[in-house]
Image 1 (tube, rainbow, N blue to C red):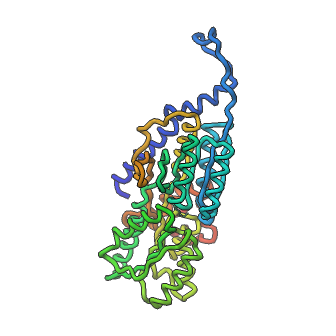
Image 2 (cartoon, protein in one colour; image 1 turned 30 degrees about the vertical axis):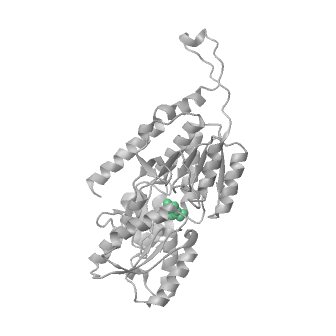
Image 3 (cartoon, protein in one colour; image 1 turned 90 degrees about the vertical axis):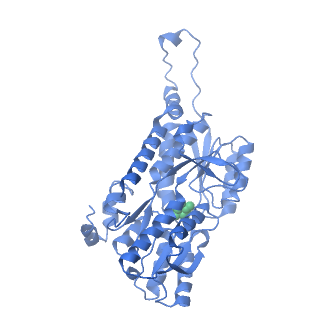
Length: 393
Ligand code: BGC
């Protein structure tokens, strides 16, 4: 890992930490802590101090799908825990749309109908979700565009995500470096991108192409509708039958779920995935275990906890009608309608041994205990020898 990246990252963590403890957010905490205490200082003792009413009301958290582990395993629990800590007593109305945009639309409409005061929305379809934002904002409900950018002629109040073009660059750079190290002169790469309705998928693809174009031959490229692993598996089957078993050197897959599908297709066709370096994203447990087994080359690790906690802090401040400190926002992203104040975190490429600009499994997800306190044990179950070799304990 290079020094400038480390310092960018630590600056961002410092900013996020500040976000979680500073001014308006701390106010969120303070008021609820004061509720019911009734104690006044000498200066206020004589005044007609009234107890603040017990906090009440609700917000909505709308996540897009559950086939990818992160949403139920990390985004939701980290968001809920931080929001409850900062804004106790406020209900979180949670829905998961399972990648069906029409269901998400209904879930959002019900949340608006019951009077939520803030909406955190990770859209299935970034364009059609513009309608949800416009409906919410007509009722003065602020909206945070979570992880995926909401477009469609709308102006969400905030956007909290990662540098998603960088995700695609990291995937492609790691793959290219591996192919170069393996002496593959003119690499032939298959590409399976993410859902075309997800703006992130567009950015991952752009980032990857910015590295690949002119250096490799993209022998096949398509998109897995709704990020479905089984769709990726079918696409890879089609690629293999069109190209032949030896018709590609490596596989670009936008995330770990679709990498799992593509690798299953390789195995079914009698191709050894160890000989076809494959990319992924999310540092899912299954993806990390495939890396340990040598079946997947790289994943991109995104720390979900700071992302979810920063969002919870924003949501709490907005619930209280406070304007979060603008200096806590570290960027702006144009969604086609306006520049949306944004918090953007830094993704990290992870390989078995931390080759080149990547980090090792031991130095990233294991060190961070990404899957909980027993992360190493979870990763190593069934992969004991590979873990010992990779210094994972
Ligand atoms: C997220 C990825 C995830 C994908 C599928 C993207 O918007 O950023 O982390 O793998 O959606 O849910």
